[in-house]
Length: 191
Image (cartoon, rainbow, N blue to C red; front, side, top):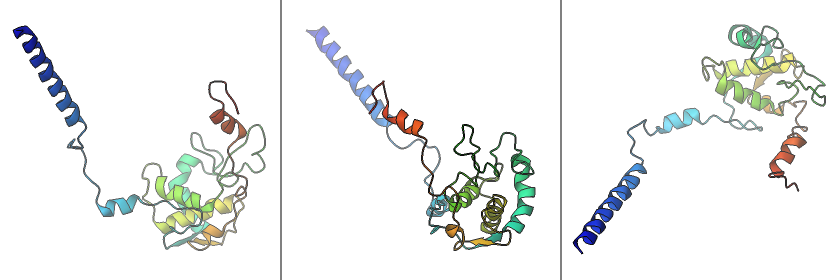
């Protein structure tokens, strides 16, 4: 009887220790990082939708954007924007989307001009993302749109004009049928 009580006591003790360790492991106190301040959250809350409601004040033209492109972008995207090695092409590709080897560029693939602004603002330049001012982002966006034949060189892009830009692929942006089929054809069962 004494052995059974000892085993039961030992088992109960081990179970309590394991349960306590599991509970402690799930508590949110890891002493790593910190809770972001409201200002830090606002700084990262930078999504811009197709209607451009979230675009900040500022403006820029393709003329200004050409200078910035040469300084900030050409090293990765190439001088012409079509000769990049390792970075996406930015210009060209017109008429290739329905071919076996489509060339997807900002001008022929992206559905909304505001998406271009949003991406540049968040991610460019690659070595210092988010470092460009709103005016610089508008200027670079205008330059990309101009080089793709979408706007005139002297057109000013701002929070009012940018959402009105009609991108060539605005109504044709759909996932390829192969992507749709793969999502529904799992384990050999297809709809």
